Length: 407
Image (cartoon, rainbow, N blue to C red; front, side):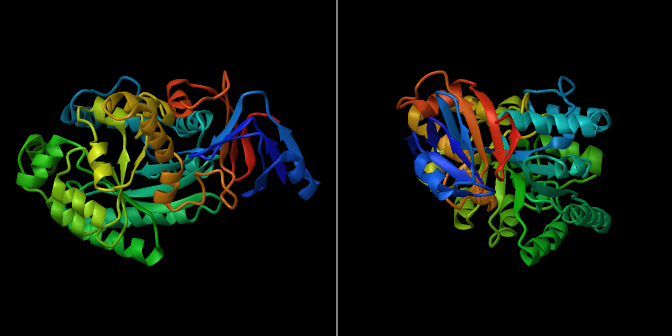
């Protein structure tokens, strides 16, 4: 048992001063230090420096670790040009990111206070790195393939990867399923995968309506994807439209990533099916896909969270940076209120979407906590300051264990 005494605690909706936390794997009690010492006399007491702020660890719900080798190989500014550059450099990107490369990306997230991440795994090359990560990991085994003739082989590979992730036995590692997108996965495969999801109660995610190319292809089998599918897959028509795709998930709450090109009917289906949208503002900007209409999501009571995506469409895996870009992008949103929404999106709302007992400084929650060294006493605009200023993160606790910093 430990007792930690910061200057300030952010829950993340409320700020408290001069309280302490008694914790082991979970937060046992929040109160005054002297009271906690009396109740837990054997506990180690950790006194933090002046202007220390303890808050929930951040949750990065969508990241592609396998493509962490990219720095300047890929083309930005247009989704289709980016996609062609991924294909052209695919072998170099995959072979160029060994276990050390992937571990560096995971450690970089830890340094920026990310205590949980959702790894979208296409090939299981990142399995060992994620299994050995200090963070909690929701390991989304991705299913992809739009050709019916290849369905059995593709599903067999998917099952092998899913089984390998299930074989990982360590606290905080959770096998899960990802459906790549409506244009890239055949309905036969989706149905088979969702049977497993339902039977085993696995978390589920999918990319949805990321680009105009996807919108045009799903609506009319035309647009920029027409040439792409013809050249690479000898495919003249989409395998399903957006309506057919969403119908697969009617009874399975799903984390849908991007959703920048969705229409009103799709948003209503997303709401009715209790899905959550993952907002990746830097990726959307770099690939020329536009801006997620968060105001529309809020008006429709559709939950959303924030994530970095991978280094194939980002320059760093830093949720504070992601929040800052979103804060600047949504220029019409009230600054302080939207800052609070972004902090919630990276903590308690992300935990809820992933079904995890974390994301809050609250009794009974897992002790996933980070300590920020503020430069001054916090004021009413703390939420905005947390996003704008890259404060030093001096300590990171995951499931009660100190994983960064010293005591």
